[in-house]
Length: 325
Image (tube, rainbow, N blue to C red; front, side, top):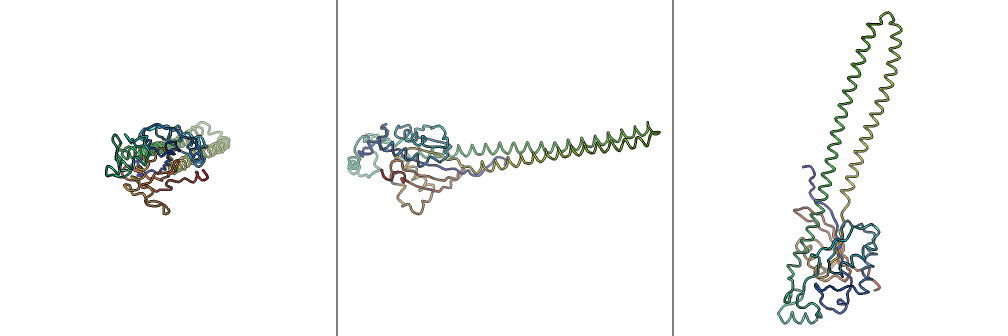
Protein backbone atom coordinates (compact mmCIF):
# COMPACT_ATOMS: atom_id res chain seq x y z
CA UNK A 1 0.00 0.00 0.00
CA UNK A 2 1.54 3.30 -1.11
CA UNK A 3 2.69 5.60 1.67
CA UNK A 4 2.24 3.08 4.46
CA UNK A 5 4.97 2.86 7.06
CA UNK A 6 4.69 0.44 9.93
CA UNK A 7 6.61 2.51 12.49
CA UNK A 8 8.60 5.72 12.87
CA UNK A 9 11.70 6.29 15.00
CA UNK A 10 11.89 9.40 17.19
CA UNK A 11 13.62 10.65 20.31
CA UNK A 12 12.41 12.54 23.39
CA UNK A 13 14.52 14.50 25.86
CA UNK A 14 12.65 15.42 29.06
CA UNK A 15 14.02 18.03 31.47
CA UNK A 16 12.71 19.05 34.87
CA UNK A 17 12.69 22.81 35.48
CA UNK A 18 15.49 24.60 37.35
CA UNK A 19 15.49 25.30 41.05
CA UNK A 20 13.15 27.82 42.72
CA UNK A 21 13.20 29.32 46.21
CA UNK A 22 10.28 27.02 47.06
CA UNK A 23 12.46 24.04 46.09
CA UNK A 24 15.16 25.31 48.46
CA UNK A 25 12.62 25.78 51.24
CA UNK A 26 11.09 22.33 50.54
CA UNK A 27 7.66 23.85 49.92
CA UNK A 28 4.92 22.31 47.77
CA UNK A 29 4.50 24.42 44.60
CA UNK A 30 1.93 22.70 42.37
CA UNK A 31 0.16 25.21 40.12
CA UNK A 32 1.56 28.20 42.05
CA UNK A 33 3.59 30.13 39.47
CA UNK A 34 7.00 30.57 41.12
CA UNK A 35 10.01 31.84 39.09
CA UNK A 36 13.49 30.38 39.00
CA UNK A 37 15.97 31.57 41.58
CA UNK A 38 19.54 32.47 40.61
CA UNK A 39 20.82 28.93 41.06
CA UNK A 40 17.90 27.64 38.98
CA UNK A 41 18.87 29.93 36.10
CA UNK A 42 22.45 28.67 36.34
CA UNK A 43 21.22 25.07 36.27
CA UNK A 44 19.14 25.78 33.17
CA UNK A 45 22.09 27.41 31.40
CA UNK A 46 24.26 24.41 32.22
CA UNK A 47 21.60 22.08 30.86
CA UNK A 48 21.60 24.23 27.72
CA UNK A 49 25.37 23.81 27.38
CA UNK A 50 24.91 20.08 27.78
CA UNK A 51 22.29 20.00 25.02
CA UNK A 52 23.67 22.74 22.75
CA UNK A 53 24.60 20.37 19.90
CA UNK A 54 21.28 18.53 19.83
CA UNK A 55 19.14 19.30 16.78
CA UNK A 56 15.64 19.54 18.22
CA UNK A 57 12.75 19.40 15.77
CA UNK A 58 10.04 20.24 18.33
CA UNK A 59 10.15 22.00 21.70
CA UNK A 60 7.42 21.98 24.37
CA UNK A 61 7.17 23.35 27.91
CA UNK A 62 4.67 23.86 30.70
CA UNK A 63 3.07 27.29 30.90
CA UNK A 64 4.33 27.77 34.48
CA UNK A 65 7.23 30.20 34.35
CA UNK A 66 9.77 27.98 36.13
CA UNK A 67 9.45 25.47 33.27
CA UNK A 68 9.07 27.86 30.33
CA UNK A 69 12.02 29.99 31.53
CA UNK A 70 14.16 26.87 31.93
CA UNK A 71 13.29 25.88 28.38
CA UNK A 72 14.14 29.29 26.95
CA UNK A 73 17.51 29.32 28.75
CA UNK A 74 18.27 25.88 27.28
CA UNK A 75 17.36 27.06 23.77
CA UNK A 76 19.57 30.16 24.11
CA UNK A 77 22.61 27.86 24.24
CA UNK A 78 21.56 25.67 21.32
CA UNK A 79 23.58 26.16 18.13
CA UNK A 80 21.34 24.08 15.83
CA UNK A 81 18.63 26.69 15.18
CA UNK A 82 15.89 25.15 17.35
CA UNK A 83 12.21 25.66 16.46
CA UNK A 84 9.93 27.99 18.43
CA UNK A 85 8.81 26.93 21.90
CA UNK A 86 5.27 25.53 22.14
CA UNK A 87 3.51 25.99 25.49
CA UNK A 88 1.25 23.11 26.55
CA UNK A 89 -0.74 23.27 29.79
CA UNK A 90 -0.87 19.47 29.96
CA UNK A 91 2.78 19.62 31.03
CA UNK A 92 1.91 21.51 34.24
CA UNK A 93 2.85 20.21 37.65
CA UNK A 94 0.29 18.30 39.68
CA UNK A 95 -2.30 20.52 41.34
CA UNK A 96 -1.73 19.88 45.07
CA UNK A 97 -4.86 21.71 46.19
CA UNK A 98 -4.98 22.87 49.81
CA UNK A 99 -1.36 21.99 50.63
CA UNK A 100 0.28 24.24 48.02
CA UNK A 101 2.71 26.57 49.78
CA UNK A 102 3.08 24.24 52.79
CA UNK A 103 6.41 22.74 53.88
CA UNK A 104 6.84 19.17 52.67
CA UNK A 105 7.37 17.71 56.17
CA UNK A 106 4.02 19.14 57.28
CA UNK A 107 2.29 17.51 54.32
CA UNK A 108 3.89 14.16 55.19
CA UNK A 109 2.38 14.39 58.69
CA UNK A 110 -1.02 15.16 57.17
CA UNK A 111 -0.73 12.10 54.91
CA UNK A 112 0.12 9.86 57.89
CA UNK A 113 -2.79 11.27 59.87
CA UNK A 114 -5.10 10.30 57.00
CA UNK A 115 -3.68 6.77 56.84
CA UNK A 116 -1.86 7.43 53.59
CA UNK A 117 1.69 8.02 52.35
CA UNK A 118 3.37 10.34 49.90
CA UNK A 119 2.84 10.76 46.97
CA UNK A 120 -0.37 8.70 47.00
CA UNK A 121 -1.95 11.11 49.49
CA UNK A 122 -4.55 13.31 47.79
CA UNK A 123 -5.16 16.53 49.80
CA UNK A 124 -8.47 18.41 49.51
CA UNK A 125 -8.77 20.00 46.07
CA UNK A 126 -5.74 18.13 44.73
CA UNK A 127 -5.44 16.39 41.38
CA UNK A 128 -5.24 12.61 41.55
CA UNK A 129 -2.12 10.80 40.35
CA UNK A 130 -4.24 9.07 37.72
CA UNK A 131 -5.41 12.39 36.31
CA UNK A 132 -1.84 13.72 36.17
CA UNK A 133 -0.65 10.64 34.36
CA UNK A 134 -3.58 10.75 31.94
CA UNK A 135 -2.81 14.26 30.70
CA UNK A 136 0.95 13.58 30.38
CA UNK A 137 0.31 10.34 28.50
CA UNK A 138 -2.21 12.11 26.23
CA UNK A 139 0.44 14.71 25.38
CA UNK A 140 3.06 12.03 24.69
CA UNK A 141 0.76 9.99 22.44
CA UNK A 142 -0.37 13.07 20.54
CA UNK A 143 3.21 14.10 19.73
CA UNK A 144 4.14 10.55 18.68
CA UNK A 145 1.10 10.35 16.39
CA UNK A 146 1.85 13.77 14.91
CA UNK A 147 5.41 12.72 14.02
CA UNK A 148 4.13 9.43 12.60
CA UNK A 149 1.56 11.23 10.42
CA UNK A 150 4.12 13.75 9.20
CA UNK A 151 6.56 11.00 8.18
CA UNK A 152 3.84 9.06 6.36
CA UNK A 153 2.70 12.18 4.51
CA UNK A 154 6.29 12.83 3.39
CA UNK A 155 6.57 9.22 2.25
CA UNK A 156 3.38 9.51 0.19
CA UNK A 157 4.68 12.69 -1.49
CA UNK A 158 8.00 11.05 -2.40
CA UNK A 159 6.26 7.98 -3.82
CA UNK A 160 3.89 10.17 -5.85
CA UNK A 161 6.83 12.13 -7.32
CA UNK A 162 8.69 8.90 -8.14
CA UNK A 163 5.57 7.45 -9.78
CA UNK A 164 5.15 10.54 -11.98
CA UNK A 165 8.85 10.45 -12.92
CA UNK A 166 8.63 6.79 -13.94
CA UNK A 167 5.55 7.40 -16.10
CA UNK A 168 7.18 10.43 -17.69
CA UNK A 169 10.31 8.45 -18.50
CA UNK A 170 8.39 5.67 -20.22
CA UNK A 171 6.36 8.19 -22.21
CA UNK A 172 9.58 9.89 -23.32
CA UNK A 173 10.96 6.58 -24.63
CA UNK A 174 7.81 5.96 -26.68
CA UNK A 175 7.97 9.49 -28.15
CA UNK A 176 11.62 9.05 -29.15
CA UNK A 177 10.91 5.71 -30.88
CA UNK A 178 8.01 7.22 -32.81
CA UNK A 179 10.17 10.16 -33.92
CA UNK A 180 12.93 7.86 -35.22
CA UNK A 181 10.40 5.80 -37.18
CA UNK A 182 8.92 8.91 -38.83
CA UNK A 183 12.41 10.16 -39.74
CA UNK A 184 13.22 6.85 -41.39
CA UNK A 185 10.01 6.84 -43.44
CA UNK A 186 10.61 10.42 -44.56
CA UNK A 187 14.14 9.56 -45.71
CA UNK A 188 12.94 6.58 -47.74
CA UNK A 189 10.22 8.59 -49.50
CA UNK A 190 12.61 11.40 -50.32
CA UNK A 191 15.16 9.00 -51.73
CA UNK A 192 12.59 7.32 -53.99
CA UNK A 193 11.39 10.64 -55.45
CA UNK A 194 14.91 11.82 -56.18
CA UNK A 195 15.82 8.60 -57.98
CA UNK A 196 12.70 8.85 -60.19
CA UNK A 197 13.18 12.53 -61.11
CA UNK A 198 16.93 12.56 -61.66
CA UNK A 199 17.75 9.19 -63.18
CA UNK A 200 20.11 10.75 -65.76
CA UNK A 201 22.25 12.20 -63.01
CA UNK A 202 22.34 8.98 -61.02
CA UNK A 203 26.06 8.96 -60.36
CA UNK A 204 26.08 12.53 -59.15
CA UNK A 205 23.01 12.01 -57.03
CA UNK A 206 24.44 8.86 -55.48
CA UNK A 207 27.48 10.81 -54.42
CA UNK A 208 25.32 13.59 -53.04
CA UNK A 209 23.05 11.09 -51.31
CA UNK A 210 25.98 9.38 -49.64
CA UNK A 211 27.24 12.72 -48.45
CA UNK A 212 23.82 13.59 -47.10
CA UNK A 213 23.56 10.25 -45.32
CA UNK A 214 26.92 10.84 -43.67
CA UNK A 215 25.77 14.23 -42.41
CA UNK A 216 22.47 12.81 -41.21
CA UNK A 217 24.26 10.00 -39.42
CA UNK A 218 26.43 12.55 -37.64
CA UNK A 219 23.30 14.47 -36.67
CA UNK A 220 21.56 11.34 -35.45
CA UNK A 221 24.67 10.38 -33.51
CA UNK A 222 24.67 13.73 -31.75
CA UNK A 223 20.94 13.38 -31.05
CA UNK A 224 21.47 9.93 -29.56
CA UNK A 225 24.32 11.25 -27.41
CA UNK A 226 22.12 14.10 -26.21
CA UNK A 227 19.21 11.78 -25.45
CA UNK A 228 21.52 9.34 -23.70
CA UNK A 229 22.95 12.16 -21.59
CA UNK A 230 19.44 13.34 -20.74
CA UNK A 231 18.44 9.82 -19.73
CA UNK A 232 21.59 9.51 -17.63
CA UNK A 233 20.73 12.85 -16.06
CA UNK A 234 17.20 11.67 -15.34
CA UNK A 235 18.57 8.46 -13.85
CA UNK A 236 21.00 10.41 -11.69
CA UNK A 237 18.20 12.69 -10.54
CA UNK A 238 16.05 9.69 -9.59
CA UNK A 239 18.97 8.15 -7.71
CA UNK A 240 19.57 11.42 -5.89
CA UNK A 241 15.88 11.58 -4.96
CA UNK A 242 15.96 8.02 -3.65
CA UNK A 243 19.11 8.74 -1.65
CA UNK A 244 17.54 11.89 -0.22
CA UNK A 245 14.44 9.88 0.67
CA UNK A 246 16.56 7.31 2.47
CA UNK A 247 18.37 10.04 4.39
CA UNK A 248 15.07 11.64 5.41
CA UNK A 249 13.77 8.28 6.60
CA UNK A 250 16.91 7.78 8.70
CA UNK A 251 16.67 11.21 10.33
CA UNK A 252 14.88 11.10 13.66
CA UNK A 253 12.73 13.87 15.02
CA UNK A 254 14.08 14.91 18.40
CA UNK A 255 11.59 16.44 20.83
CA UNK A 256 12.55 18.57 23.85
CA UNK A 257 10.03 18.66 26.71
CA UNK A 258 10.47 20.77 29.87
CA UNK A 259 8.06 20.01 32.68
CA UNK A 260 7.90 19.34 36.46
CA UNK A 261 9.07 16.72 38.89
CA UNK A 262 5.81 15.06 39.97
CA UNK A 263 4.29 15.31 36.48
CA UNK A 264 7.31 13.76 34.77
CA UNK A 265 7.44 11.02 37.40
CA UNK A 266 3.96 9.88 36.36
CA UNK A 267 5.00 9.82 32.70
CA UNK A 268 8.17 7.84 33.44
CA UNK A 269 6.16 5.31 35.45
CA UNK A 270 3.84 4.87 32.46
CA UNK A 271 6.75 4.38 30.05
CA UNK A 272 8.48 1.78 32.24
CA UNK A 273 5.66 -0.01 34.05
CA UNK A 274 2.85 0.19 31.50
CA UNK A 275 4.73 0.21 28.19
CA UNK A 276 7.54 -2.00 29.49
CA UNK A 277 10.52 0.22 28.62
CA UNK A 278 13.64 -1.44 30.07
CA UNK A 279 16.03 0.57 32.24
CA UNK A 280 19.74 0.89 31.44
CA UNK A 281 21.79 -1.70 33.37
CA UNK A 282 23.31 0.85 35.75
CA UNK A 283 19.97 2.38 36.81
CA UNK A 284 18.22 1.37 40.03
CA UNK A 285 14.77 -0.16 39.32
CA UNK A 286 13.16 2.34 41.72
CA UNK A 287 14.52 5.37 39.84
CA UNK A 288 11.39 6.07 37.71
CA UNK A 289 9.38 6.47 40.94
CA UNK A 290 11.77 9.08 42.31
CA UNK A 291 11.74 12.80 41.61
CA UNK A 292 14.27 13.97 39.07
CA UNK A 293 16.77 16.56 40.35
CA UNK A 294 16.19 20.09 39.07
CA UNK A 295 17.18 20.17 35.34
CA UNK A 296 17.69 16.40 35.42
CA UNK A 297 17.77 15.07 31.85
CA UNK A 298 16.01 11.90 30.69
CA UNK A 299 16.19 10.69 27.08
CA UNK A 300 14.18 7.98 25.34
CA UNK A 301 14.36 6.47 21.88
CA UNK A 302 10.84 5.65 20.69
CA UNK A 303 9.77 3.57 17.71
CA UNK A 304 6.08 4.27 17.31
CA UNK A 305 3.17 3.02 15.26
CA UNK A 306 -0.51 3.55 16.16
CA UNK A 307 -0.62 -0.02 17.47
CA UNK A 308 2.67 -0.39 19.34
CA UNK A 309 5.62 1.28 21.07
CA UNK A 310 9.20 0.06 21.24
CA UNK A 311 11.12 2.15 23.77
CA UNK A 312 14.70 2.42 24.92
CA UNK A 313 15.74 4.53 27.91
CA UNK A 314 19.07 6.18 27.07
CA UNK A 315 19.42 8.09 30.34
CA UNK A 316 17.21 8.84 33.34
CA UNK A 317 17.57 11.78 35.78
CA UNK A 318 21.04 12.59 34.42
CA UNK A 319 22.56 15.57 36.27
CA UNK A 320 26.23 15.47 35.23
CA UNK A 321 25.98 19.09 34.10
CA UNK A 322 25.35 20.15 37.72
CA UNK A 323 28.68 18.92 39.07
CA UNK A 324 30.42 21.57 41.14
CA UNK A 325 27.28 23.54 41.94
